[in-house]
Image (cartoon, rainbow over all chains, first blue to last red; front, side, top):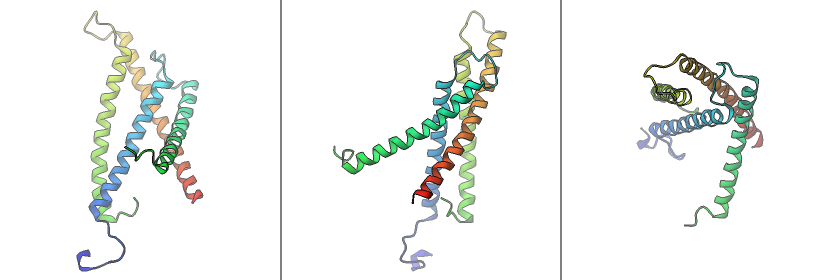
Amino acid sequence: MSFLGFGGGAPQISSEQKIQAAEAELDMVTTMFNQLVDSCHKKCFDRNYAEGDLTKNESLCIDRCVAKYFDANVKVGESMQSLGKSGTLNRK
Amino acid sequence: MDQLNYKEQQEFQKIVEQKQMNDFMRLYTSLVDRCFNDCVNDFTSNKLSSREETCLNKCAEKFLKHSERVGSRFQEQNQMLMNQMRGGN
C-alpha cells in the first residue's frame, strides 16, 4: 500500500523490520539476563549446597551483584561511547 | 518497541513463545550440567549416592530460587534505568 505514496514523507519501516527489531531487543535482554544469573551464581555460592533455601548472605550477595552488574553495564557503555566519539574504535 | 500494531504483536507473540520454549530447555540442560558438575564426583559406583542425590536436589532448588531473585532485582534495576532515561531527557 505504501508504494502508492500513502504516508509519504516520514520513512516507513516495514512490519518485518519492526518485528526484527523487537526480536533483537528481546534477544539482548534475554542474553543479558542469562549471563547475569550465571555470573552472580558463580560469585555468590559455594558448591556445597548445605540447604536448598537462599541464606541471608547469599540473598544479600545476589542483590548487590545485580546492582553492580547494572552499574558495570552503564560504565562500559559510557566508555565505549566516549571511545567511539574520540574515534579510537573506528581507527583500524 | 511498543508501536507494533495488533497483527505485528500477534506475530511477535509467536516468536516470543518459541523463544520461551528454547529458553526453558536451555535452563534445564544448563541446570543439569551445573548441578552434575558440583555434586557428582565419585565414580566408584554407577548409581547416585544418597549424598549426591541430596546435593542435586538442593543445588536445583537453590539455583531456581537464585534465578527468581535475580529476576526481581533485574526488573527493578531495569525500571530504575528507564526512569532515569526518561527523567534525564
